Amino acid sequence: MAIKREFGKEQPFIPAGIFKIRLPLLHFKWEWSECIQAIIMCATCLGAIPILESVLEIPYDIAWSMVIINGAGYMLHYVLGDPVVPGWITPAIPLVSAFLMKAGVAGPERNRYLIALQLEVSGAFLIMGVTGLAKKVIKWIPSSLKAGILLGAGMSAVLGEFSATGRFLKYPVTLTVGVIIAFYVLFSARFQYMKQQSKFCKIIGNFGMLPALIVAIIIGPIMKELPPPGLVLGSIVKIPDFSGIIQTLSPLGPTGFPGAVNFAKAFPVAIMVYIIAFGDFVSTDAMIGRAEISRDDEHIDLNANRSNIICFLRNGIQAIICPYVPLCGPLWAAVTASVSERYRTTGREGMDSIFSGVGTFRTMTFISVALYPIAEFVRPILPAALALTMIVQGYVCGDIAMEEAKTPVERGVATVMAGILIQQGAGWGLLAGVVLHLLCGAGKIAKRKERVDEE
Image (cartoon, rainbow, N blue to C red):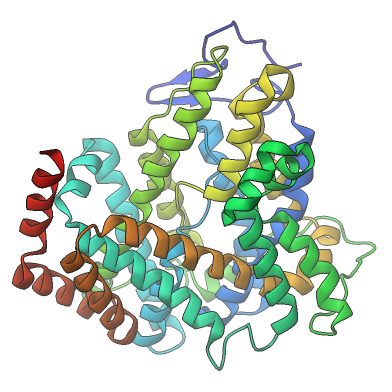
């Protein structure tokens, strides 16, 4: 029986400095809606397997083990007091993948570049979390550069899926139908209106990308683009192959620690990755803040410094044990939005605490990715689930980039920067963006426009 919360107070916790420790069933209730959603949505978590297999050239068993370890890290957020559903740094995946494919040859050298990158990203989270500089630093970065990074990441994601070697040509019908459903549910103005008028549409909308994944499970085998879901009898729980990971990837094994060259080449990418990740903190503040306003029965302590430190721990631990191409980000936006919306609209009877929702979801995804029956059932749709995630992420990145670039000059600089970033890599893209921003005076024009708008 979970400890009951007093009206208007914080959900019970064990104090530990900046952290507030909460454990399932003791400090919050189990939510069956999030539990069911997590069982299917774990396909997105397992969608990291194709990325790891292709970029790091490792076998399925090692990649699956890495996903399970990553799933355990997700739980650090709610355990230590962060009221969100964490995820990858998804928009950065195309940038990181392209950097690794270009920067070093396959094998240990490529692994060392990834280790260097993840350690640098981990260090950025630590510095920003300890000093509280995050908000100040992000204001120093010109809008044209932010937009260029996001636009480059979004275009890379979409181009990668629709290229000659991309997943769309392998699963055209499955992905076409899946994208239509995902975009309609997530972005259609008409569907948003329907959610206000229909309880059924509201329920569907609250499940985010889940309807598209369910359709992929059905359409893929019918069109013979994907094998049917499999059932595994006998084996139940997958124990991660720690020995295999250390021997294959970890700096504690034959790979060794990265050198100065690895860190130097990874540094521009690390800067871009943190800029992208910082956008998640802004989104988190908006979503959780909106949810708290609607519920006066619970005070939610959202601390960006704490979230930065937790991301530092996750990235640092994984860089040493199992360097992870998707990296470790502060937010899975689609699911956090779904959980916070149900929390906001159903009252305490529907979801007792925000931690009930996020804690149940992340506990169940960890359990699900480690169970043979569930992992094998969704294994056939992993490529399609990943492709849907990347295409949706491309839309979101483009939307935010266009909103960030407010003047014609900023949009022009962002577009050219994005193109160079895609073709020549993060270092050249960032350099081109800085030069064009200074050359064209994008910042001065934006300030003048702001003054005019205020007048």
